[in-house]
Image (cartoon, rainbow, N blue to C red):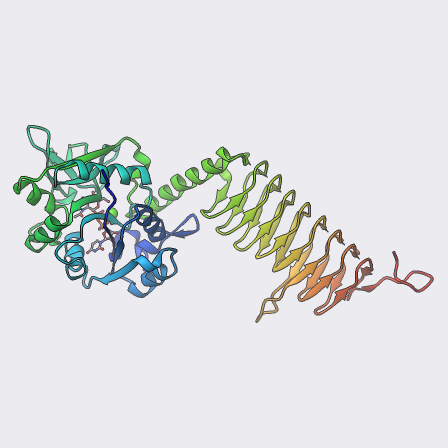
Length: 430
Ligand code: UD1
Ligand code: CA
């Protein structure tokens, strides 16, 4: 049976007071993209016709994240002002939802670890419920702050009670609500206007829809997740660090299984959206940011920093305390010690000596440098961009190549400022 949702609604309007930060919680960074971007990816992977994001706190910044996301054409934003609870967030979507929004999945913007498989199980369960609803649950070691699932004597889901409203007896229940639901659209739309804010937080709770569905004799099925790492809801910066770690392990495992040897996963940081070829080794304490592409049989680190926009071709080596930023490193080229390569384009088999700096920023603008195939850049050189170094050229140790210099192919340049080294015959050295 087709269980694809028609509409996904993502709640992203809250400030996240428990983060103790001025920025909206859903904008928090996680392995190279915002927490919201991870949730947008979850939503789009389900293949819905439309995605609605409820924005409020820092609405303009949140809209900007939505506006730059792949698949943005399907995503629309609805403003919730003020933010009076998760149920209220859906109430403000009512005009956008219309009378029948089809099958509706609701995701909270602070649950970035849910897997596609879990969300597919949720939708399949709703499809099996005979017109009812489904929600994801878990039995975590520590139910910190989650709503508790209350079941009837016959074991059916009866209602959800928020921790702040719960008696000691209800707090002792182990099954919690992960805040992910799949509803039949017409039921959801019909029940939302009837929510009340008769609770400790004086908020309109989306969770109260569950009891109302049951009162209408609809079944609400719970899909229990075994994997606790999916249940990390980010309410504090400590939770954010936990979520980052869990996402990081998933990313590292994907590369390990694809034939990338990551020597020490505990000290290796690799963002999402990084490509690494088979047979490449990543030594400890290396940081690889989103958008980096690394070929096969490369060697990275230890203590290397590869920043966005960098491309390393097959067999390149970037060693300890080397930073590569928006640069292209040709096949078998090496920068093995203590160097900064910014806005650089290196050909093949280039050697960059220890301590070399590509001075790409003059305080106002950034300029590029290009180094041709087989060139040798001696230790401690500084290339004040823009500079070009021709194929097979050599810079002597400590050379400072000034702005707009063009070192011809095969020449040897030395000194400060660097100039062609003359041999006795007064011609350039071979
Ligand atoms: C919510 C659930 C709780 C569940 C938990 C799982 C309710 C009432 N409670 O609690 O049962 O165990 O999530 O993670 O739903 N938001 C808005 N507008 C608002 C309020 C919140 O868009 O007016 C957004 C927030 O930005 C956030 C999400 O909804 O992304 C969840 O809000 P939060 O306040 O974190 O809910 P919890 O207290 O965690
Ligand atoms: Ca939460």
